[in-house]
Image 1: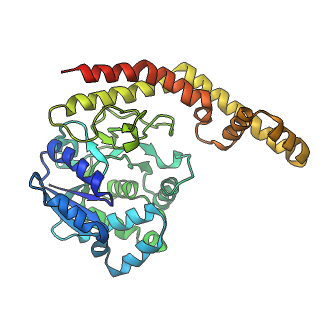
Image 2: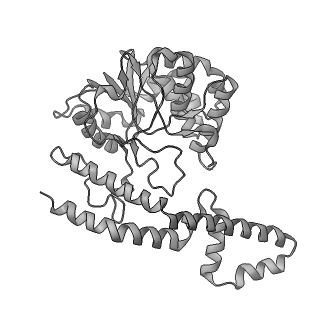
Image 3: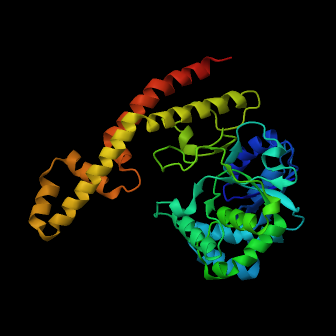
Length: 373
């Protein structure tokens, strides 16, 4: 079976390929879709004598063709670019009837059987949220969640979010059908998100091809629980959504190697799962919940005061500039932080989380990891 990966980061892709080759034994070929300027670097990855998998490199420009290249180059939205590329995948030569779709930073944590993706002739689909319940509206990704919900709702399709940041199985013929169904949105350059668009439409059009949706099985999506509220919890992570900053000094996974280690990967994976679970427990604690509720109440109070003082600029200036610096920063952060204001406050993030997690768990865990045979 083939796995198709769209990437413009050859170094990250090469490191992730080590995990994929070792832990997804049912795969026979990896197809990289990359910018033409990086094709030679990806071909170096393909030519390594250590490769178990056949590696094919396809340039984005070749895949898109003349009609879509112009739209791809002019848009600034990563969501639009991703949909243009992935909806064009059926044009790949020698693409199988079914394939695994992935990104260059999705890494298996343990050995993955084919049954993770398909059983009894029907494929599994993994969801992580509800599109209509996505609250953030700051990035291309956030807007893509909203626009995708609107496009699906117009046709009466379900609106689960399948952007689970883990590999998933795609039926080539059905992808062609879904791309045709949303051709108008594609031509208008709407920010529609490829995973959720495909799986919601595909399951509605061809329910016989799919099992019931399953909760996603991804570690570090989100990287930290302070990023956004989970709608469902992963059912035992099988894949890691790789963030290089988590491995940097002071990061959540400091001391654990980024590259695949055939002898130690299982222990490393368990350690990463434990560390992330520790952070989640801190976030879920009664103390943290109280902190968040208090922060929301304070934020509403500050916003109300700001609105009341709109007609009194002198009073506003006095409040803004006469207060000590830490108070001004506190007020500013509380007023601008929308999703989870408690965690923008200095004591709750840099003091509370680090003292409760990093000092208590992380250092002792790193020592035990280093000492284990």
